[in-house]
Image 1: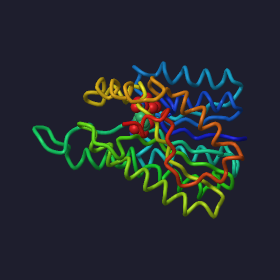
Image 2: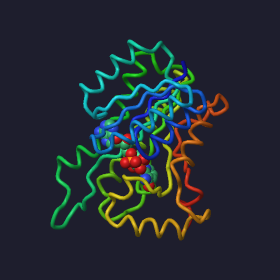
Image 3: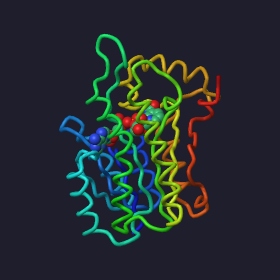
Image 4: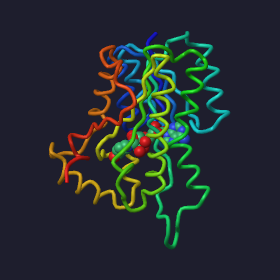
Length: 255
Ligand SMILES: NC(=O)c1ccc[n+]([C@@H]2O[C@H](COP(=O)([O-])OP(=O)(O)OC[C@H]3O[C@@H](n4cnc5c(N)ncnc54)[C@H](O)[C@@H]3O)[C@@H](O)[C@H]2O)c1
């Protein structure tokens, strides 16, 4: 059964993608990290996927933990067949937002955690899904990047570094998995009002600047990105590989 694995499926882009892909006929494997206080948003995504007539298989685990990933993979191997996974979306937001210098600068531990969760964890999920044969010919890998990959925002340094890791991982996977018929692209979304955005220090200034420069005159929404991902899963997009694709209404290129 065509299935999309969404890392970060309970909120923001991941939740919107889970809903959009289920409406488009895909089953959803969701990985997320939620406490009781945010369980309602997980339940809402699962209910919407099921209301669309699709299967929702959700795991509340740390996607950057090797043991947790092994547990999810064991369940997927038992429950899904080779080639079932059409797409893997990396949409994890969990990192330290702190300056590099100053009173409370980012520590080595915080930096490495951020690079791992928001950057290199993509590689290990891709390795496992390909090795297990779940993600095969015709498969797609997408990872969420931002303008902060090439611009400096106060306190965003560790996440900016993670975006560089993520984009490099996408390029490498694009070339290494291309011969297997699997494509990889980074998706650069515009500034979008999600819980992750609100955690960025001075996010209100980011929002005002985005509103001023976006040719479309509004912020990006999770649905803008989800709709495009559904298009990218179509056979007609099979030759799109190794790109950073902006889905931002033209925000990133506007002065
Ligand atoms: N919001 C924006 O303006 C914006 C713009 C461009 C790119 N992005 C990127 O999009 C991605 C998703 O961001 P969002 O705004 O949708 O965030 P969000 O906070 O709305 O959602 C984050 C998701 O990640 C999950 N998560 C976080 N850490 C996890 C972990 N260790 N293990 C498993 N699940 C974990 C959460 O449970 C949640 O489902 C991030 O990479 C972010 O940098 C965001």
